[in-house]
Length: 159
Picture 1 (cartoon, helix red, strand yellow):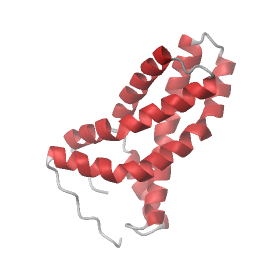
Picture 2 (tube, helix red, strand yellow; picture 1 turned 60 degrees about the horizontal axis):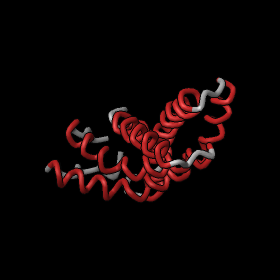
Picture 3 (spheres, one colour; picture 1 turned 180 degrees about the vertical axis):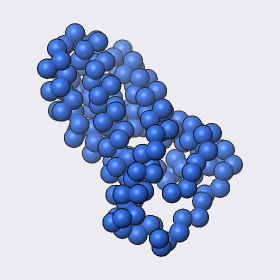
Picture 4 (tube, one colour; picture 1 turned 60 degrees about the vertical axis):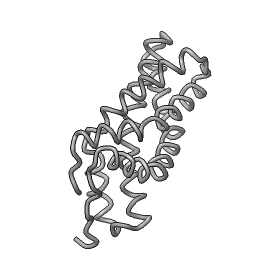
């Protein structure tokens, strides 16, 4: 797994996370039955900020390490396995934090309501996150590398 600079990671996060934050916020608020514009704006901004910082976790390395054990780099299976892990990290963190804010802070709910909401929101948020990761990762990476001027690394095809 090739290391990205912090600058590249930040620019990548700004590009990659916008559609992710919007979609996850929409899904979460629809599930909660609270798709009001003010709540959407607050929660979308919160999701965007959270995902920006989550990008600095080594989730891509964890995904790479998992994928390399079960597939060959450059294959669809490799990309899917890598993104299964990365999407899981993003959704777990987003689900825990955003549900806490939505249910406990804004909603005045109980801890039991929070747990039920976290569990109920994971799969509906995970599947679209995985799809976004699979479709948007490549273009976001290319755009961020063009902006920063950091070349695409050579990825070995055998390990």
